[in-house]
Image (cartoon, rainbow, N blue to C red; front, side):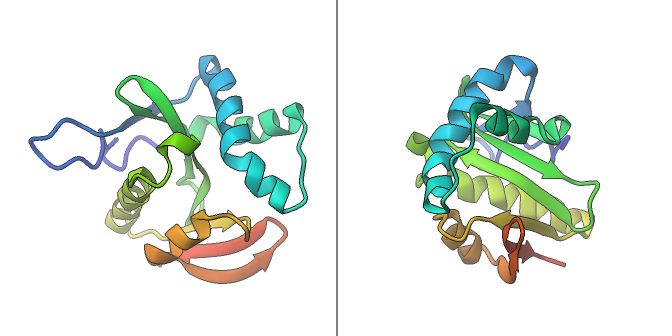
Length: 159
């Protein structure tokens, strides 16, 4: 995902960036595993799932070339994984550490992705676990529910 402007971020002009992202590397795998367990563990458990470490790592490595580590300052706080080769684009993962949630960062990330998609004339699709609190965030930002699938609840934004 070079950028949606490889958006240093969504900070207003003249202010220090609140966040930035960079390509994820193998050196980030320990953090990404901790992140996935912290961010997704409760949602997966609510859906009756209890993945092994190997299953978590397989999901992290899926489309790893599309993975962007989200940083606040130099501290990693999340992951965005967007497949822009698909039509519509597919948001494969957006995860934030619990301490970074409900502070506007998820909204800023999604708005950045939406702006990039709109500029490219693309829509974005995703699958969310129905018990996930992120479902409300997506709805607030104009995503519409398409329906259930084998991968969760399908949602789309734009085209």
